[in-house]
Amino acid sequence: MVTTYNFEGAILSASPCELGEGPSFEAATQTLWWFDILGKKLHELHLPTNKETQHDLPVMGSVLAAVDAERQLLASDKGLFLRNRATGELTLYHELEPNKPGNRSNDGRVHPSGSLWIGTMSKTGEIGAGAIYCVRKGEVVKLYDQISIPNSICFSPDGSTGYFVDTKVNRLMRVALDPATGLPVAEPQLLLDDSGRPGGIDGSICASDGSIWNARWGEGAVDHYSADGQHLSRHLLPAKRTTCPVFIGSGRLAITSSREGLDAAERAADPQAGNVFEITAPIECPTEPAYLL
Image (cartoon, rainbow, N blue to C red; front, side, top):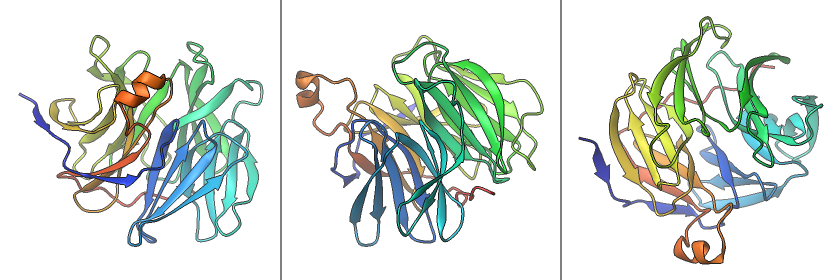
């Protein structure tokens, strides 16, 4: 029996995103970052002061990772960029799919080794147009092809296991990795088959105990799974299109959401769509690793 918890959290940001995605948390500065992919904005929220800053982008950004005290790595529809923290200036680091201008980046995460896994997808939803790549010290390796909506990229704390999903298929996969590189050492295995269930498996994080916390698109929820795929609990949110959770401190999760594709009536019925929420949950996570240039 899956335990369901009603929403008793808070709204961290009521600046609604068309497609809120890619949340990351920098423990050293107590700063939460996330994107409005379609709105071409990077949001920055300093949690102790609740000060939110919105940065306009010339690209459709989706993933942000720390590099060092001066720079961040930003994934987008135009490739990977180094972002100057002080000025916001973007410098091209590596192209991803220069021959596919109709694609953009989507879900991604830095492996404990310092490598980045990043997924791509069609801007118009073309089936099988995307892929998942591993970017290690500037070298790009394609891992999986024919992906429609790459999501749930996350890693066990020791780096020996990776997870990913094509949300169109809704089958969460698990793959053995080389902890030193973040590259697969075996073929992916099925962990969870939700192909016939409502909603979509969206963004995920892996906790210190190896369990998985997943945002359920269309169901307004974050689901908690054991490392062997057992559904442990569901935490409800006040927006249907939840996209990705992120750990923001002991027992705390922030969750992004979207209002993409909702017509006027649907937006009226889902007034908090696109906001960022906080819930309390029994979770601890390692510090997010920096990307290694």
